[in-house]
Length: 471
Image (cartoon, rainbow, N blue to C red; front, side, top):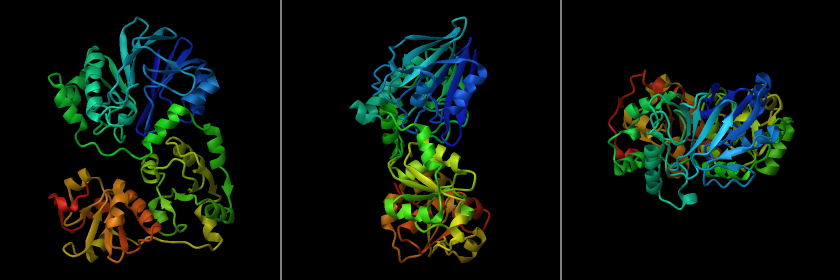
């Protein structure tokens, strides 16, 4: 028996590859399936089952393409209603893979079809669970994503999750290994650990939601407290996972169409496509195609694309670093952004060679900010999360998180100058590009963000004035 966690950092997502005696199972595969096919061939094993823990909201699974390529059936837990051929298992149903078994544990609460898969080793001993979004390391799945589909409130879903954890998971032996679907950085929970593997015993001892003496009312209150609104693209990803989607190979083919600067400009004008520039923010601010949105590939790229663009049907034209076109298309497809019309051939350099119009962002260093700012008079916008802002921030700065930019952008006076920063420059350049694309130009973005500002003498505080926090 072999178990491998295939962890994708930018999505904080774990897929699982399991083999035993010439047969294999894959749990929650990513959108691009060729690496799995290569691995199956290299190991000379047959894929027997593709297990899905639930209809994912934060990424598009590769279950359909993988099933088509291997003829392996897709397995969901009880109550799932996929709009394609699949096995909808019953609670406690057993699936055999080589000399091991996978037992279905229906664990609703995150969603109503959420299922944990219990692996029984060659001796029949309970060895590990693949808990999907039911149990994370240090946290549990948020119970607010499936309210509409379930016809339930988040409190009712949380109560359902409480019983799934107590009745199905906490009854397992302490030494059973826990393999979750996500780790720190995923929006599917509130406060996940950076660790990606644990045990039932460790989680009973350290996970706030698994306290032995916790009441159902306490669980509901603590699990639902402080939940941020889910990204807008989540519902669209659920629909794609449930109904089906374009094959990844076709999406890749379209996105890999290299367009000259002239064709790129023409298609942008004809289609109204969004120009997504994935270069480093340190390059972007110096020169970019007017109206471009910058979300750097070297960061939490896919989640921020989903949060900022939201509509997976949006046509997109790409400007990437040379050689990173395929990676960019792949990472966009993981969160359902399939309508990629092509990329700028030769990268941004080819645009400048044609002497076409460019734009810039007004960026200064933290040292320049230190010299120019008057915290008593100047407007300073800190676009970090509220938790980051609360820990320490520039005195008198307003907290307006990037994730809520569509709300607070309407409150800005375009005639009044403001300074803007995040933690290191990644998020503030996203915000700067959005602001500028919408006609706001009277601002200054700070290179290096609060990390650089913290090293200066600019006044800082951890006191939070509620009037300066965007809820």
